[in-house]
Length: 98
Image (cartoon, rainbow, N blue to C red; front, side, top):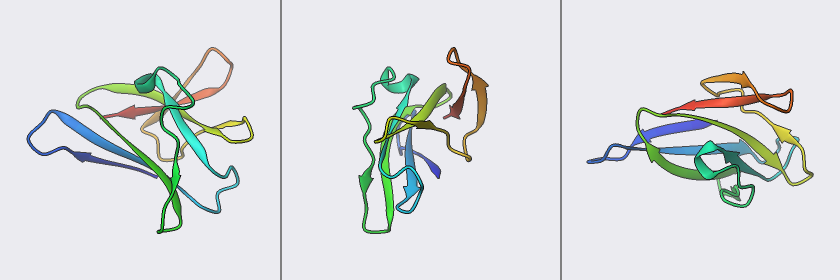
């Protein structure tokens, strides 16, 4: 799930990425153009509400690409992304619009 909320008094958007604890990939990191595709930058944390989640604050009105990177080394997408586009690995990246 992707939740976007405007940061009051700024031109920023807080984007929260969350996955259910029982998702087949387990814990993951969010990797994308907003963090230079760094798999250590936005690790999802287990929460009391039975999810894994992480949040990033980004400039409003921008377009980013991202994917999830699982602990087992696999990549997967979010079915609630704003769209998808082909990447150089023959797969699809998620699109996030703020």
